[in-house]
Picture 1 (cartoon, rainbow, N blue to C red):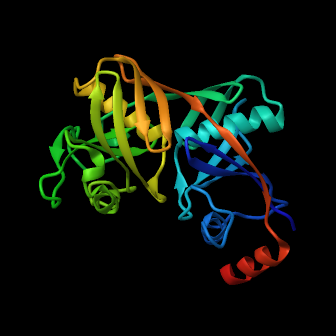
Picture 2 (cartoon, rainbow, N blue to C red):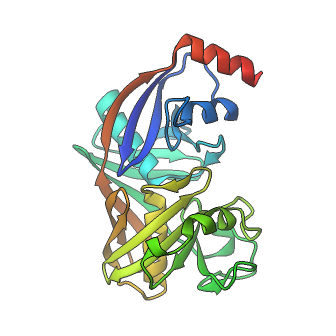
Picture 3 (tube, rainbow, N blue to C red):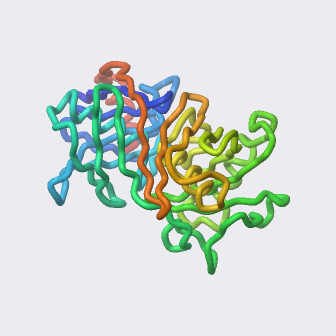
Length: 282
């Protein structure tokens, strides 16, 4: 049994595309082992091609903790790039995820994805709250104010005036990720408005922890900023540790992202490594 993966990153947010699995089932235990930074291939998740129920290309997105993500902006951009460079897909097409289909466009190493429309409606996040949770205090967290946003997956955005690296956001991240308000847990973003069209952010990703970049997180932050009147609709630059991502937010909350991806290379699991992990997981 052989298992081949193509490692590609978007602004430091790296994923392993499952190129060849030979019938291998990606169990949560195996996903955690493969994504391990020291004893596995290492990655912020695994992108698994699957059959689509429409004319789109199908995708399952696995978090490094073994859970499944509804959507990932960088994951979609990476998968779109892989489809064009490794599977001969056209420059424009649809990718189907468990949260719906999204339009993608690949221009060399620059990839754009239509992320859909951001929503603060509780059922769209989801969040256990009777009304939209916008700039409100998170219970039990010492006065931290947040906005809950859904864009195919859940997000919790916190805005600060201070330099983000002076804040203990790595401590806050896991507490907010598993906060009781969010039945499916949540991605967490800490943001600072730098200009009307530029936002700095730090990311605590659900199932992955601290992350250098995230397309869906950048989308949620920019949509929340426009919704709260902190930024004007249009193009906003999301400034992340891994680099800048362009985000367009319309007046209705529709979001498009655009940025670079880079292929690292192809990796193959050794038979010895794989057999050992399969025995452990049984």
